[in-house]
Length: 89
Image (cartoon, rainbow, N blue to C red):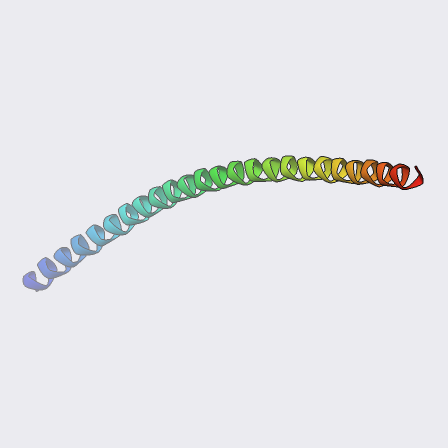
């Protein structure tokens, strides 16, 4: 029986060590997840900033294209009027 008590005591120590390992692993896992979430959040912020920049740039290009189109329409109208005046003379 003395040998069985010793074995049981050793099994309890192993179980306790496993419990400690599991809680340490959980803590490390939580720390890793927290770090990964932070990195993911940082990357998403960077992407959001890049998309905002692209959106502003696209809006600027669209505005310039509208101005160019309006200018083109005005020039065509002027040329049309000049041609009509030349034909009338």
